[in-house]
Amino acid sequence: MAESLSILQSSYSSCFIDAHSHLTDEVFDKDIADVIAEAQRIGVKAALVVSENEAQFNKVISLADRFPEFVLPCLGVHPVQDIENVAAILERHHERLGAVGEIGLDFTPRFCKADDDKTTQKLVFTQQVQLAQKYDLPINVHSRSAGRPTIALLKELGASRVLMHAFDGKPSVALDGVRAGFYFSIPPSIVRSQQKDKLVSQLPLENIILETDSPALGPVKEERNVPANVTISCDYIATVKKIDPKEVRLITTQNAIKLFPKLVKFFAK
Image 1 (tube, rainbow, N blue to C red):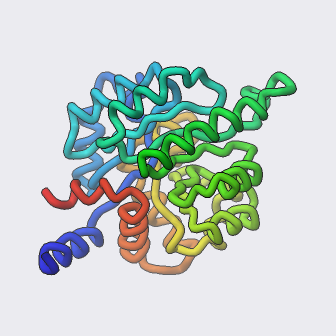
Image 2 (cartoon, rainbow, N blue to C red; image 1 turned 30 degrees about the horizontal axis):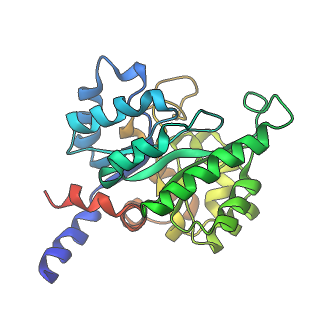
C-alpha cells in the first residue's frame, strides 16, 4: 500500500489538473476529442467540468461518460437560477461528482437588476452549499464582484472544502479565505490581469490551484481558451513567485487532490 501511494505521489509532479472548465460549451462541440487529446499530450491529467444551470447537467454527465479518463463532473447552478430539481439530481449523481459547482454570487449589473436579487442569490447559494455538505462534497465557487460577501457567507455556513475560482477581489479579502482553509484557482488570463498578478503574489502556494475556465479567461481576450493553457497559469505563477514551474505544478496538483479527492482515480490508471 505504501509503495502504491509513493508511486501515485511521484506521478503528481509531472501532471496538471484543470480545476474549473466548461468543456460542454458549444464552442467545443465539433472538436472536444482533439481538445482533450492535446491537453493530455502536454500533461493535463484531468479537468473538473462544471455546469452553470440545470440545462447543462445532462451534458456534463454525458461528457464524463464519454471521457471517463479525463473528465471529473461537477453539477451546480449560479447565481440566480431555478434550483427546484437540483436536490434530486445531486442525490442521483453525488457519488460520481467531484464537487458541487459552479455555484456562488455575482453582484454585477447583469445579475443584480432588482432590489432583492442579492438576497435571492444568497439563498440559492446557501441551499447548494448545504447540499454539498450533505453529500460530503467540495464546492467550486463563482464570486464575481462579490468576493467579500461570498467568503463571509461561506464562513458563516461552516464551509471548509472550497475552491474560489477566478477570484476578482482584493488580496486582503482572499487572505481571509486562506485563513479559513480555502483554495484559489488561477486561470491563464493572469497574463493580462494586474489584479490576479497581485493576488498570486500574496497567496501562499499551498492555497493555489490551476484552472482555465475554458473557453473563457484565456491568455488572449475573446479567443477560445482550452485546458492545455493551464501550463500558462503554471509558468506565470512561477514567474511571479520566483520559483521553478515544476514546483508550482507539483504543489498545485497536490492541492487539487487534497480538495477534490476523487481525482486520485485518474492517477491510479
